[in-house]
Image (cartoon, rainbow, N blue to C red; front, side, top):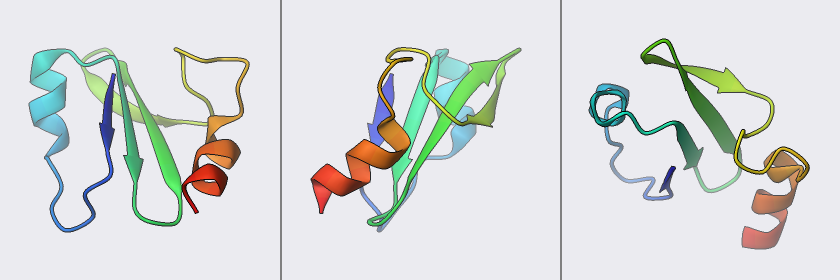
Length: 65
């Protein structure tokens, strides 16, 4: 898993894809985006695979504020 919170510069998806990072979370200062690696490419997901019972899309931004 990788978590990006630096909103001044972003790492390109293909860098994480090449490393085989199964899940990438990106926080832009107000919202969280979860990307899950499927067949070598990231797709946006409603919830993460690592914590399937935790509503991270709602919880993480709320706690970070």
